[in-house]
Length: 423
View 1 (cartoon, rainbow, N blue to C red):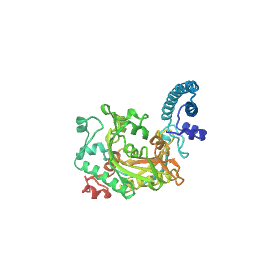
View 2 (view 1 turned 135 degrees about the vertical axis):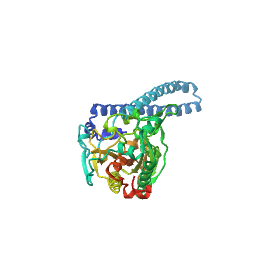
View 3 (view 1 turned 90 degrees about the horizontal axis):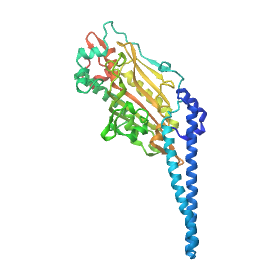
């Protein structure tokens, strides 16, 4: 959530940033936020003035009562009643304005970093790095949805029977490959200094609001009606919320966590070639890395997280590219996002496997996540997160790119985890 003080101080930059996102009526929306904040301040000032006058009257009444001037004291008490009624009206008005302001701020996305390119669609995302060789497969190469049937390692029909489309069942060596990837990703995260946590996969409304999934993505999340809880779309939500309403000391920074969870997305889709097989699921597994740091350190931290993800893909032997997302494609809460895509040899297309983002103070303001600097002043922190990695499309790429006439080769780095070198 944006801070009104920032909007006032950098109004022109914020307007330009929102235009980069194609956010409608940017100037009018920010002007409305400033107006509501002025109304809030005015109400607070009037309340403070009433309180000061009431305190002064109380002292005067006390003095008159001591002097035995009861009639005079009673006259002044009339003003006290008037102030009490006015204060009640002012408090209600202030609360109403505060709610309206907060609701408005929830509708305004984060301001893109200066490096975020303009664009009209995802086609305008900027390729910043291309690594590895394009896989060369024989003409007989199969897409992963055919390979999994041939080797009986993932069953979509059983998933449909048990739950519905987008909930596959991993079997035999498919299940072991999935588990191997999770353990590999977690071990690599631990080696990089990310402390492992295992968070809940259900969160309350306050947690969803704090990291920006609510109210923006409410329709994309699975909701448990009776308990007012949401299934998580990513481990980012519960891990970041570990620090909701927390003030950290400077020597506790940076905070680095990694967590493995299943993830749930209602909007995954159920038709078209782009959602076939493992390309788009309602439930999938992912290892997430989260970092909390001082503002001046966050972009160095973002580079470090990107290097970590790149290292994973290189160890798996996957051809990948990194995209800097344009203004209309970055997430609602993000200031800067890099997407990692691996090339699927059999599908002949790029598959997104990770997003690494810096949210600057946007999430921290909602979380009320702060730290005390060397001068003992309380400042908002920056939050970052990234997929390291999401499993379905990684598995799809491994299956497709490593197929030969004898089966599917397991990347060397995974063999200690799988216990086998081929499917």
